Length: 216
Image (cartoon, rainbow, N blue to C red; front, side):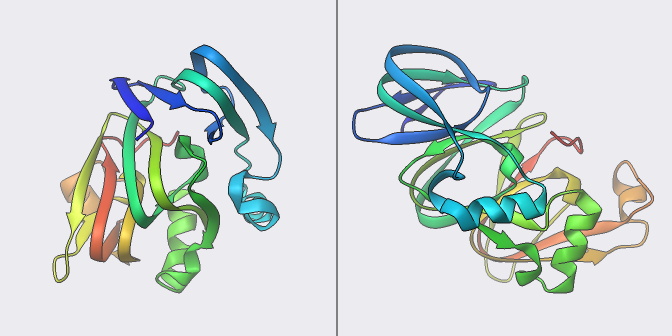
């Protein structure tokens, strides 16, 4: 894993010759060694279709290609950072939450309506997140951003996890999601906004939840 957690809001990445990383533009805080940063106009490894997907979704988060030999410090906006390791599975995460990730990971986009049908599309409207979600697949590490820190909740067969959609950060594994209404749920349990929804995730994997309902 190329990331070392310096503190809750900064990570250090090791860059070696012949391998590359991608990061959100403006996320570099400092670096050592011979490292180059190049604006990436093709949307990472997902290529043109990945870029189109994000543009349709309004997720025009610009990326940098990071290459060379050295170490780079990353952080952005004082947000908390969570490092997630992937071992062949797929991470689903909103593009604006990506801080940096391994160039070995295959990047793409997924239409949220394909997970949970119409409810997947409703989730995008309710949470303010794009109908397209960024996917990262393979073996490597991803650094994501969140408000107030992140907790990883395991999802196991027969034991779905219910999450406030505003607190959702990302998930991975063989997971299905659907949005359901629960009248009075948020008003009774947390800070109600007049919209009582739960995001239900079922299957096998994990979901990452932030300790806040704030958007980035």
